[in-house]
Amino acid sequence: MQATQPAFFRQGPKPLTRLLIFSVISLAMIVGDAHFKMLDRVREKVSVVLYPLQWLATEPFEIARTTTQFFSRQAELLAENRRLNDAQLVAQAQAMKMKALEAENLRLRQLDERQASFGSPSQLVEILYNGRDPFTARLIVDRGERAGIAPGQAVIDTVGVVGQIIRIQPLTSEVRMITDRDQMVPVMVERNQLRTVIYGMGRNQPLEVRNMAPNVDIKEGDRLVTSGIDGIYPAGLAVARVLRIDRSASSAFARIVCAPLADVDQHRFLLVLNTARVLPPYPVTPTPTPDKKKRGR
Amino acid sequence: MPVSSQLLRPVGGAFITFTFIVALVINLLPWQAEVANFTPDFVALFIVYWTLNQPRRVGVGVAFMLGVLMDVGDGNVLGQHAFAYAVIAYLTLSRQRLLNVFPFWQQALVTLGMLWLSQALMVIIRLLLGASFVGWGYFAGSVLAAIIWTPLSNLLLMYQRKPKSEAL
Image (cartoon, rainbow over all chains, first blue to last red):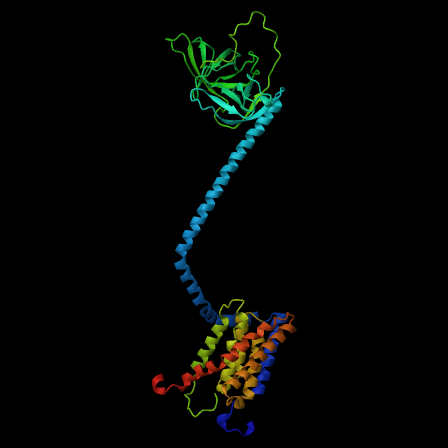
């Protein structure tokens, strides 16, 4: 039928012929591509041709997305900012708590070591609160009579002497700090073993060594440690460091100002030393003068 | 197109090219994975349409070329679409004079068969190459193509039905 077609209807090769040609080509391409990866270059070439169409297909979506993003960005950013702020606050609080815990842990470890280094038994106590009286430097700690705390026991921290137990209740006890006014600690200068007594001058005040001659051999920066001669503080606990010495000629005594070495105002855990040493009886009729605790202020 | 008394304007090659470009772009759209199965293969649809209506312009060769483009665009095995498109173009062409006078709904059924055939060929090729079966949802898009056949044909014929004075 097609052989008799006029020229107008002539279409070149018959469709079946074309189909055969093209299907052979395409099948060859399939095999070549799938099994031998021969057609990657063809693919590259065709993809260059196709790229504008792909761009056309995807670009409107990109534009739409960037546009909507542009408009929603402000609100999104605000919300995100707020969220991040909250998160940061929470994280900061947690970090602070973490730091505090770390510091506390460190102190506890140090106290633990300190405790182990003492032969005599000692107890770890936690500070409950400061005494409310502003004229005195007192602390309330969470162990009392039931825990075997007795008045007169020395209280130390990781560095040095903090004070002394002066009053006990069944569950709590009161610590008089070395900065308390007229609290006395018998000390000696570590450098030259000079024995003396250091006095407190009140809360948040430095310590003072009184009644020393202007030419006494004490220098700035000297460490004062407990001498141990009172039977209350074990010998060798750090107490204070000499801040400055005022040797004015107008006064009969040198004015020696010291700073406590222990962080008396800074932490939560203290160690109560149980140093109930058996002392030999006092030789003569006892006079109350060497009594450590002065009741007055 | 079905038999009608209306005389139609000749179709320009530019218009055919344009429709194929549109079809390619639609096929290359970044469809969501969930709806990808339900989007008809517009290139195949237009191949059937143009081989049916312009058999002297669009035939097996054009279908093959478009198939190669689709293969590259989809990142398939090269030749998969080309083969399928060439086959459906030939089948349409071989019965073109019969199909051309069918009413639209019958043409739509034929188109459905053609698209299914092309998809079946592609699935067979992929299965032979060792892929696993993609599921029957793969064939859903062709149903949609058959449904839009009638409006699509009317839309494309609208261009031909326009008076010449208006077009220029």
